[in-house]
Length: 365
Image (spheres, rainbow, N blue to C red):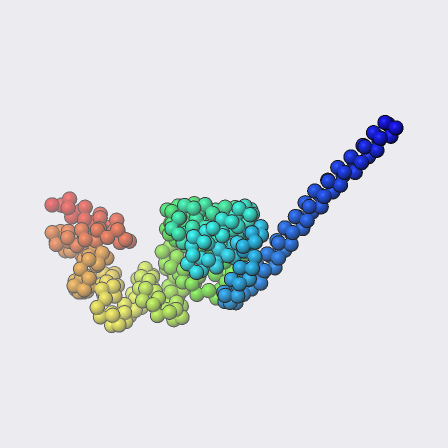
């Protein structure tokens, strides 16, 4: 009997323990099912909300989000959208919280890092923004907006060389993305690597030939790279088709190209047209003076430069050219103040030449 009771006891105990395990297992299964349902519902509602958001139905989008946002469903895209909408309303602290929640739920979500970076940038936290953009780019290196945002922050941080390298790598990975090549061209232009910038802009324009901004950037890079023969017709096209605000600077650049190409009659006609349309401006008179200098008409050039300086006394190029003419007239005392004014402008392209003339004048005292 004792043996039978022992066997029965063991059997009953086993059944009890098995029943307890099954209950725990079933409870775990129910919890997992509830969580799967919560995530599935969050995914469905997020898609509905995104559709409303992109159609401009912000109120309806918010209603959809409010249905599930307080449930704590672990679905990162839900919080990413919530962060975007909060930022749109100016609630940056709320946007940061939502974005941080998204990142905590899915640390490998590139979009969560990107949106948090956007919020940090809006809050003026440049270092944090750069860190988040860099992580987003690392997690999804095929997404152009991540690398573009990272490059923007690198440039803002004074790391243009690093931005150029990052964009060059991205251009290799995403050879068909025009915006990446154009951004690389922008950074290379900032670094005064104009010939390399030309190559990048050409690629961007080949990929999207109807982009007027790409044509404009290419024309500028061609000009600064010294490719005047190609820059001149590109600038001429911009003048014909571009907006009014771009016309004047494009005309001045084209005038410089014509002078460099020794097409002086065309340059003179262009600058004269500008002078007639802008009777208070100094730049067209300086352009006309340069034409006269190249035609060896120094007295006429001197008169034009004096007229330009009457309109803009600190015009660096006018001062430099007048100073050089006065040096050739053997009037160093008169030349010195003009050359000194020219070298004070750090943006003056021919500052180094003006400095050499100034040193010559001062050395002859």
